[in-house]
Length: 228
Figure (spheres, rainbow, N blue to C red):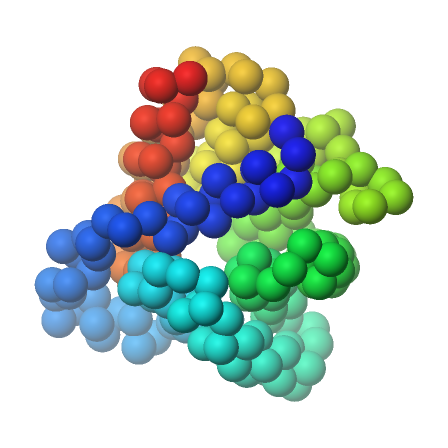
């Protein structure tokens, strides 16, 4: 699937006009206390998710994501040994890339790849292998050389490596399902991975925005599989 189609479809998932999940709007006090104890990278990603839940257009997202990216980069530069810091910066850069034109966006995604590779070098098992899974997603969606670095084979290797670290991770199962649907059309297996991801939602009680964002993406992809 071409880069524009794959990524645009998932940008559409992130920016669908569905209202915030009730769990985001009506947070229990204990969940608020848990959120305050999040690491800085996880706090950055929570804000990233909140922006994508509440803002609906590239023009609305561009400036908040640019400022968040600058903040993430500053934290990463001050904590160069933190795999989580490199991974968070990569994720935010990818989101910002989707607010830019194709050429600039592709260049930014290539930077995200480098940051994810650094996160993996530092600690591939951090956050249940999430950096491996997200890098696999990028390899699945990017066009091949010379325009990009896309490779279905590399995508599968990275995603399967992430699942070996954690087969129950919400992120690992979701990104693998995206790959299965977009690149192999293994609909039944993709559906099972999405259901497994959905069952893992309770693992993110202190990250309600990220939980809601991922649940929304899961439901959107389940619907697309059903309609395909």
